[in-house]
Length: 534
Ligand SMILES: [Zn+2]
Ligand SMILES: [Zn+2]
Image 1 (cartoon, rainbow, N blue to C red):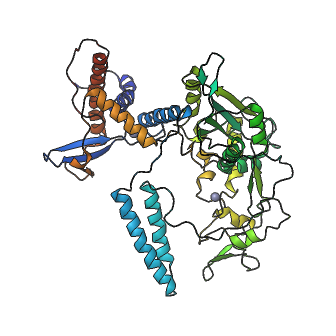
Image 2 (image 1 turned 135 degrees about the vertical axis):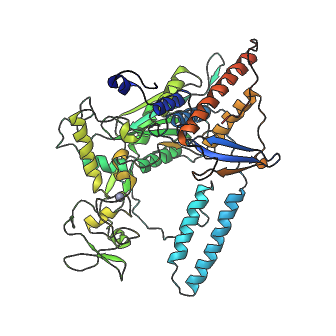
Image 3 (image 1 turned 45 degrees about the vertical axis):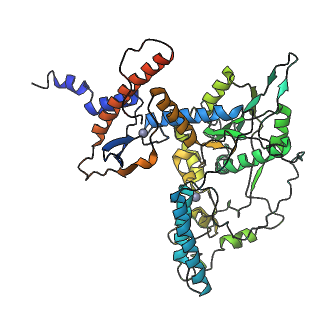
């Protein structure tokens, strides 16, 4: 008999596939590995290689998310207290990058010819857009052809209530100042800063408003939508104020009240008074058409007019203003749609290289990176659910960008319009519940932080492992790689992949332990390391 015991006892027994999954997680193995076939061109030998999925969310793959988080922490540590300027030389373009740019040149030539002959360029423009995306994805910085859209002249006059900030010329230096103690010891402190949004109404310890009706959800929604732009402003002001190219490693997270805040590791220091000065002068103005008055609710939506490619007012049959017309209509005396600022409460501390404080701060910085914004403080109580619900409501009809379908609600044609747009149904990430209005990157790192990308840090780690295990680094040109698909005879079902990975990790872990023991001079008790380090 293979099954024994009562039915109740059997239902308590864990499923075999869950046990394998748990075991894989315990061993730090990816739970959704990709299977690749590797052929050695010298020997003709074919090997199956299981590559980690590399997802950043623990919800999807705990092991990969944890590994990414550890890499981010390493990246943060490496740049924070640099005492010499990082050397940044761009790599030469690789074959793939060259291929995409060649295709892009052909497309440009075809488009320009079509335009000169007065033909429609829509298809060519679409292709060019796709190719530009591929070029970016292949790891090329910047655009092949800079945007030629006419720059709009917006009011840049300073707001009356913002104090002027002293400005210095920004030098190329990226490292902070060195201080010398009376005993001759030198140190180079850095900063850990936390910036928050302003208040939208009083909240209790559980993060929910004490007066939900007076809590300013619209302001909260708009601040979240423009949080990334505000942070850019802050860094720009900080650099002008301090006079050097300040570098940062920052992480955006929600607070319990569901407003974003940002933890920032900064190379170099400034005083609290100086920081307060920079914050007081930092604001981001959103010069968009007014969006406070509903002109077309869901029962009276504007209608698409195919011949003109515009939307019409269903009652009068008149065209809605285009995006550019609506922008031009913003008069010189008008106020911006929104002015985003940081709240008056901030946190700032000096941190020394290698100190306990430094490790603690790095812990804060990467703590929530494996979670969706909305999952960092999941709603537990009825009040918390209601609060999240009201914020989601405020975000539903708030325009997230110039192309947002919600503009129709306020009587404006969105930028680049097309048929089928419906307010409240914009697919923009910012409207989705899990983003709480902030659709930007969770980790923001300046270009000269450590001078290394995450891929470089991963390569460092792999090189270290191979060296520790005594495995020579493989020559990349020696292999060809192919994806294995379910129809292939050598395809491994997911459960089988996990079993292989668990076995690999165990063998590999044992080898690493021995290598470490050997390195520290203890007797060698086992067999030499074999196998692959994936
Ligand atoms: Zn994974
Ligand atoms: Zn939108």
